[in-house]
Amino acid sequence: MSTELFEQLEFVENPLFETIIEDLLQQHYSVVEHFFSSSEVIALRNNLLLKYEEDRFRKSGIGNHLHQEIDKSIRGDFILWIDETKADPVEQLFFKKIDSLVQYLNKTCFLGILQQEFHYAVYPKGAFYKRHLDTFQNDDRRKLSLVCYLNEDPWPKENGGELTLYLEEGEKEIVPLPGRVVIFESQLLEHEVKLVKDSERLSITGWFKTR
Ligand code: OGA
Ligand code: MN
Image (cartoon, rainbow, N blue to C red; front, side, top):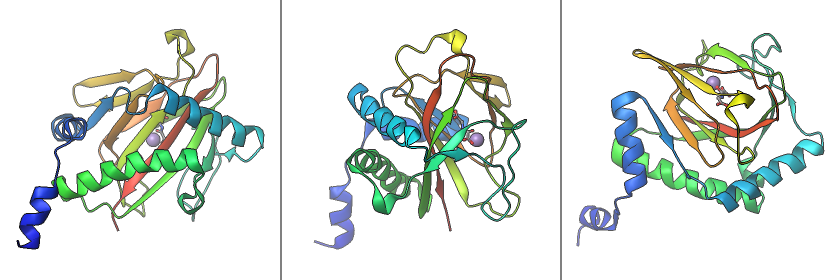
């Protein structure tokens, strides 16, 4: 049997990933419910909170690694980058699912994703992130943005903290419900995190990058 044929036989269609791809092609974003199960969300949230209490987060900046600025009038969250080579068991579980999505995207859409970067984020009460694009002026390797919400259940609407996507047809508000994952085209969609009014807003955010 030729290797080509073997690869084809090996490929198993994944309905969830197919929906994500279809959404991205049609509307440049996809919202997935229960990408992570509630027990996975709890494990990831506890992991985040442990590191947050250890004071390992730092004030987020704007711009890339070479040109970082801290400007609270633009964004007020605290972040901790995840070192994948030192991932703990909970993070390994996270990356297992993420990696299978990347493999699928590369295989079916020839996206050529070669790198990824993820950080935890905490938006304390009063924090927001003003309208922006996820690409930098001197670096356009970020192709897809992915946000995974780790908030407590329920997240009442009055808490704010919605992710607003600015689409051609208008604004799309996405409530940061636990287990929900949002994926969108980094170079195309401007977006914003609305003011968090009450409890802390918790997430993991990351980017799939080409070379
Ligand atoms: C970001 C961002 C969106 C969100 O970190 O760049 O836009 O919903 N996050 O947390
Ligand atoms: Mn963003």
